[in-house]
Length: 129
Length: 129
Image (cartoon, rainbow over all chains, first blue to last red; front, side, top):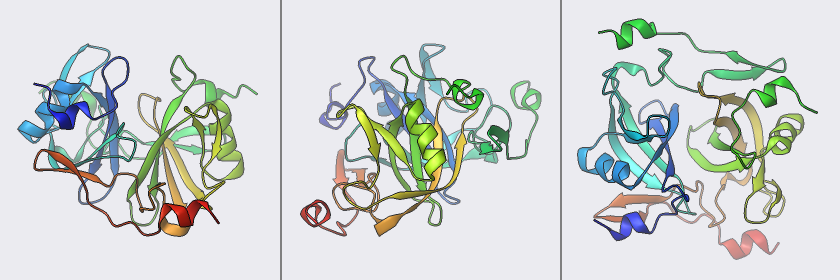
């Protein structure tokens, strides 16, 4: 399937595009990961964020292990057509594998990146259900 | 200058890292661009977003031509230490070279990416000052 709306995007040489997930209510930026064409297509078809895991080299249905599914509300691209932005509902209120709301919890202060957000749930309680 | 806080980040093979700019008040995601080490260092030193332009292959002091400077309020990285997120004040209220508030103005609807935000200022009025 080679839909125009997919092919018009600027994919990297590896066939990927960065995708940002933002909480549709709070506006908190939750994470950025990568999608390939199949991931983007399935994200829209299934109404949930599906990424491409570059480390595992396979589709990553966000929440498949943790239950922390990202339900899709809105999806946009930027003027250069090389970045995706999703408005999502973050089930469980936790996007990060460390058990925090957002993956962006390391804040620059005193010449260091310092954890600035609480752990809402211990990772061992997220993944050994 | 090879500060730890710079070297601990996961840079691409090209020496870059993606950087997201978010409006610190409205929470609107304004754009995503790339930084090299020098851009990130100068962003923090000067308190304004400075990117690396991959097309022009030089530092891009956001707003240098348009006046649409992004004043830095807060800067974070994610759990994988491979993405930067900035809270900024967007001077002029316009981040996009098309004259829109945000670069993410193309919304998916009816199997197409459709402009969903108004042009606040004509590009010719932004760049021919």
